[in-house]
Image 1: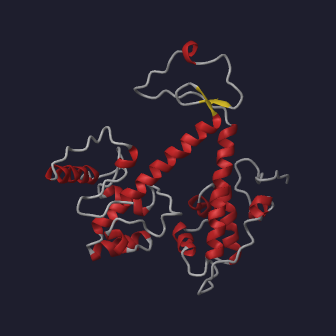
Image 2 (image 1 turned 180 degrees about the vertical axis):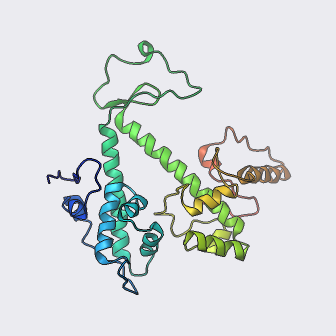
Image 3 (image 1 turned 60 degrees about the vertical axis):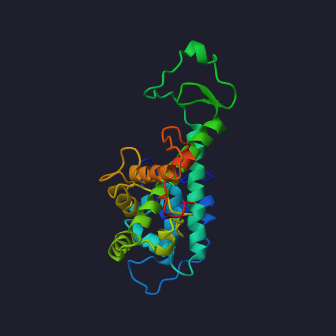
Length: 284
């Protein structure tokens, strides 16, 4: 089976074997790590070979969750493996695999032919008014039907993704701050999500230890609980609008100080991402 440097080449539509993936030089370079130690060896547990396969499939699929699905393993077990004491080498391989997958995804996007997308409420100028006859070298068509430098286009897309992810994480912090005073809710959150939470940090609305690597995903238990408790934005969420309540409390606090209420429609994205209660420490 032929493979090209930097990417395995399985048959179309087939899940590649671990051997196919390990033949990829870039993936092979990530597999020389010390496996996360296991206190009990189980036949269906995360053996050293399966840990290597997980790293390879993270690169191939683009996410730990999809990698676990391809292996018919539970993502919660992989996360527990990631947090195991003495798994520094495994964590480094995991992070490198995520980074390589993202790099490959950007390369694929850059090679794709892009087409303008109609955005509701935005009238696209007529082609004769805004487009040159042909793009300049290095330009692609952006979402407004305009030619834009490809690096700028990809940078804006990545920045938008980062902003959304950052805001979701901040909303989770607000939810954790809200339940930090209830032992029952704290225990339920830890049981359902299997995430180690520093509740002292949560009470101060501070970042948790998993945030440097944790990607907010609305299908994961921690973000489902956050949304169902009302901490959300847009149409994602249920129950009372906690964000609106926090903004109202902030405006009340400003009124007590003789200040004008915040114009939330005009507030900057960074300010909107900090809806902390006046009585709490600001979200960082």
